[in-house]
Amino acid sequence: MMTLELTDKLLPTDQRLRISSNMELYWDRIFLAPLAHSALSVQEAAVTQADLHFLGYPKEFSSDGRLPKLYDYDSVDRMIPWKSMSGQYTRYGDVTELLDRADDCYVIMGPGEEITLRFSTHAFSAVPRGFQRRFILKTDSFCKDMDLYTAHPDTVTPLPFHSMTQYPYDANETYPQDLRHQTYRRQYNTRTVVGQ
Image (cartoon, rainbow, N blue to C red; front, side, top):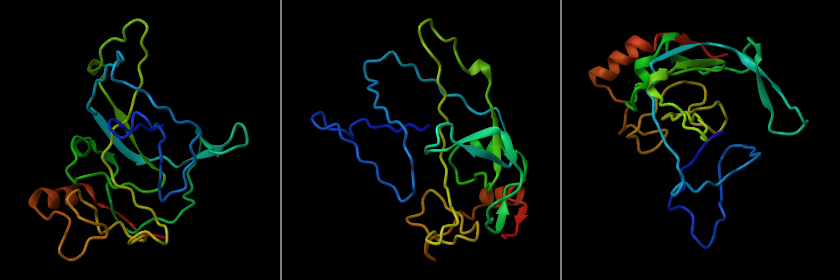
């Protein structure tokens, strides 16, 4: 499930919505929700603990035989069925400090890996009578696949960064080289993966 802010993107006289992508996506439902006059209450909570580790691949299934397929988290295959990009990945373990801001110091994770997130229950107020609580994971992230048409599909590098003007970027741009980013790479990106 994902959300997208559409304020000022739809015309009052034309509520049609066009979604385009370079990916193969399946949508089973799309809802438009006017929130201006609702009693919606939004609370943000920071991650208190984040742990990067290998999980494997939840088995795909379809309860009705149609797409999209769902994933059974209780039935996990630990074999890696895909190739991996070569490069320096984030070491397993605590990665909490990498998730507190969008600063180009991020978790580099590969196929079958996951981050377990923990939040403090004290960050949330009680749910008023007649209301329901829903959780939305808000991220700032980059995604790279091994498609033939993806730039540098076999390697983790070149690393993306927020101020780049394009990807792949040319020789006039580079991932930040200041002391903070060099320290991040030395401290966290210590797991060498050789692609298969």
